[in-house]
Image (tube, rainbow, N blue to C red; front, side, top):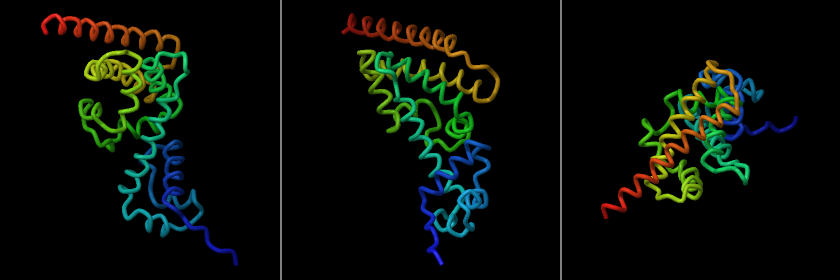
Length: 195
């Protein structure tokens, strides 16, 4: 008789991600995961004592995947625009994962102001700061403007309210970025005059 396959936390998380992609985070439960792994519910519940604990672990993994997706930018592309377009593309390609990240209540942060200071956002803000050449404070202001714009587009698309037109979205995103950038530069000039 062959030895039983050990069901690991990573196997459970990956199975739950696949379930989420297909039918949403609400479908994550011990039975669905165990069926996907072809095992009983016992190993699943051994690794995660509650479904909420499992969903939080799945959320953390999806958040990491999302950050990696955001940071995959074409070298000649402006980092801010690239990140914004990737944010929207993620919602197009993985609407269920997008809903889980941003519409499920599982985020650690409860507002954009909390999110902007989160550890997960450090690489995104660093790339934006490098692309803009501005202070981190001004970079965060630009990020908030672009993030609100990109999130609006992505939410509408992820919830089937709008067909994705990358050219149009890129033009609008570039306008939002340019407006936020010009405002930040103007504010820095005004600040330098008063110092």
